[in-house]
Image (cartoon, rainbow, N blue to C red; front, top):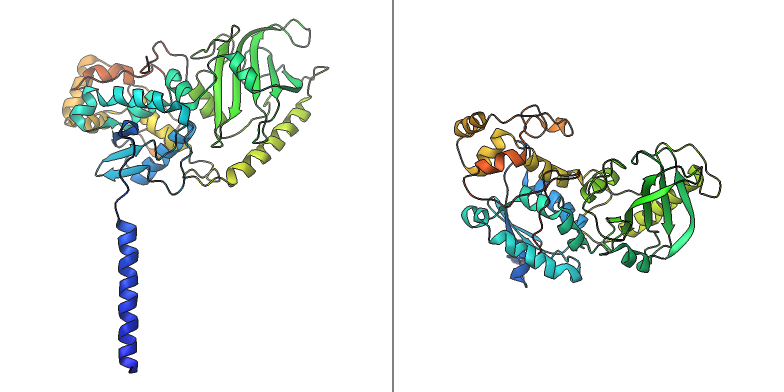
Length: 393
């Protein structure tokens, strides 16, 4: 074989290899195994710089907060123009929660919005799944009663008496429960009245924190009888709903921020802070070994999930115009005719006025103007709400 023919042969082999790689990279995703766990979501831009990559990150974090394993190799999100198909079976949601997910998705897909628009607004999906306690509890597998929680998490060593709390308006009692197989303890917080130092503290309600198999935190709220609560009592604590717990903790176990008063017989603030540091190191090691679409090393990525529900819950007229497919001047006039008040939100001011500015509306005020009937969402994303949806009845 001449040098020229050998070169030609090598070139053909390289072309064949490149074609094989191209076909492998562009081959369609496998069809979903369970259509009852599939839903189409419609992307409506919340702010000008928002991209599909941002949406993917936000959806992955949303599903992760809800217990999904999200294997790195799984085909969870498939885009077609501005609609993304979400496959919750591929996402590996918690197996025992799949019946609840199927019921939830069936309710969404039967809505007028879904039928008319070809999918549900991504923001509405996140509000109904993550920011609605009844759905959050069902999807994450929170213990249905506090007694069930205690059966899974036996008691541990000493308790922590928090006199100056950054969350509770009075004293707060923390119990450290024995570590699970992950090696990280579960925690119970009691809100109440009276003084731990003077031994007059009376428990009033309960908050729980534990680690799910996917490395995320899971929160539960209970009354003293052990029944689930949708939110904490505002006169006792600023903890709000589970979605606020997630927003505050992010992905962290947190030491006391303000406590300086020691109480005999309890952990000192320094001892408790050391316990939290050691637990976080164990948790970070566990998370590092997960092969997931969520990267815990990118510590700010959880914010993309928050953008999804905040942009929806507090829309601008521009966002509503895109959402409803109605010209902006008409939307503006509709809002003026209703004399709806606007407000400012600076939580994400770096993204511009279209998600954090002075001209934001309340979702509860504008949904009645929608050109199609919609499923009502919580009246607040994080705080005690006057209305909470239950799509699992």
